[in-house]
Image (cartoon, rainbow, N blue to C red; front, side, top):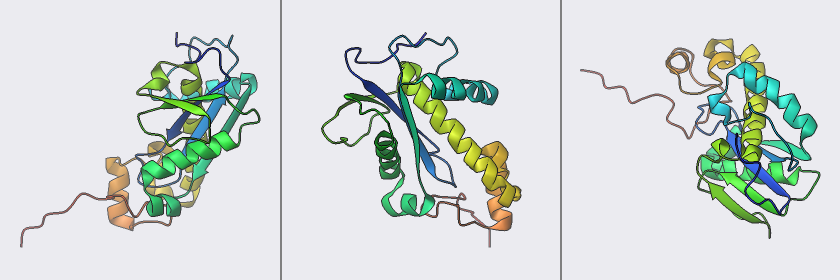
Length: 198
């Protein structure tokens, strides 16, 4: 089982993002403060869980967390400030939304910008080490997946209900056939360079 948090003597929020590598749609982030006695044997890195397992954990996390918040940064801003800055800004927005102010932050990955005067620690693959980061990864992922499934209803040809806008072969083929939408990230390489013999 994962450790509850990094700093046991602090009111610590775990933070993670979802959708950083996608070709379309917003990047989402979540911040979660769990009770120190929180236990769940299924809780782990959202990428290691099935969609059904993530969906079953989401209401448990939202019900039992001391505080949680989910935020997103839209495509225009991703294209304007780049995906790394957008991911960090989404995490800052998710911390803004917490009903309790944490005294420390633990961040999945190796890049973050200080949030006010609150100390932070970056942990590579932290969503496989700490429950609060894993919980944040599940909330960010499930909220984003739900958002992309709704966009799929408007643009079914891209199969966002299945690929969630990652650069799958089917998604890239659809971009080649139908072009891009207002939801595609124009700053991303949406199609590989095509070499044609003359």
